[in-house]
Image (tube, rainbow, N blue to C red; front, side, top):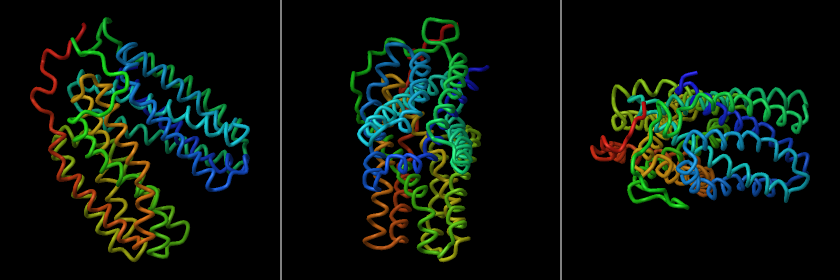
Length: 392
């Protein structure tokens, strides 16, 4: 297995874990007799765990190597899949979700940092396609999870079996990852100081992170509110409302799978500007729509336009940081925060004013993203020739 295919398989594995668990949340709620408020608190715990874990991931990658850190952390993420369903009470569920979130965030940082190193080694963009593989894994696992839920399979059995299967798949993929420093074919940052024990974003990473904040805000708001918007504004039935979310996700996944070809041709800045323009048109359609078809078309354009933003932000941050892990960890904390608050802010604006006003705000966020695109341009001295040492 090539190094590129191996890291793609790791991304797909990470997405499959997330997609699997999301389909069994109703079972967990029913099994533990959770109120909506208690479930909402439980679902905040993964983000809290991720915030706590992500800043330390770069230190682990530096000490043990990107390859070893990625393999270990993706294994912990897969193993953690079974924990929420095995929780005997809400208190245990909160703890399970905290550990699950920490493993999610740390493995996310490690695999993206590894991808940055490989992207430098290959000399071409691969990050968009890798994030596309994450979406493929999530959609495929979500589909299987929906079938398991429909068949009435106990979530403890379902998640346990999938956890073991993904552990085996992730371990097999991990053997093909780019070797760590000191072995044939490895790449490392020479003479880089150890990352801080708790790496918060630097000033340079904050600028890149703001682009990621805008992209993730748009993605989180659209994915969480597309179906509700179609129902409330266009009077769409349940099937059409669900189609709005599905079309948005499929367009985003497809664009990420194909995005590297566009990035190689246009470069990151022009790609973000072009995608932002497409997403702005989509946002205008959503705001103006009073029929399901027009709104779905708008959400499709939003998905296509913002698809490559997060992959490009991770790549830029990995190249701007002292080490790839530290840069990725810094920007990941920002994008996770954005994804956490976007659904709530959208709901508050929609409740206080209207749904079209809320999505007009989201469209303005995309305009800001487009204006900030130049910060993704790699400076000539961001990684001088001597900074990368290739062992052959």
